[in-house]
Image 1 (cartoon, helix red, strand yellow):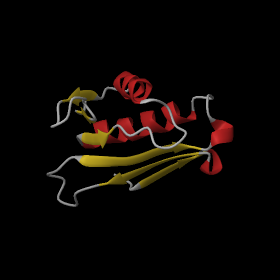
Image 2: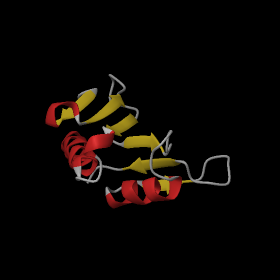
Image 3: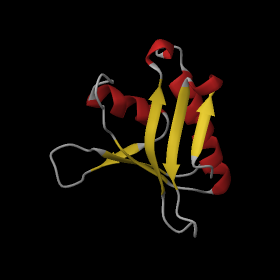
Image 4: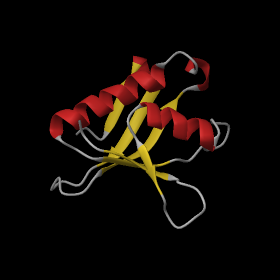
Length: 104
């Protein structure tokens, strides 16, 4: 998989860390949409592309839900990732902050 996806001239981007051997999940480190472009579906569009590529390559995706400053709430973000096929699993804390997506 590519390590960076960029959409619409940099209005949306996704950064990934992949295991070169392909034995470990690819980690989604950031999904970002510039503030002036939010609410237009660009985040969903670029994440769908990442998921299509992961499915085509049989790659498991892993991420940590982190709202970041000025971003969506934890609950809204977790629901958004769920709509893209990610499922939460319990880590050590009281919340599911790690989500995984198996290839279809």
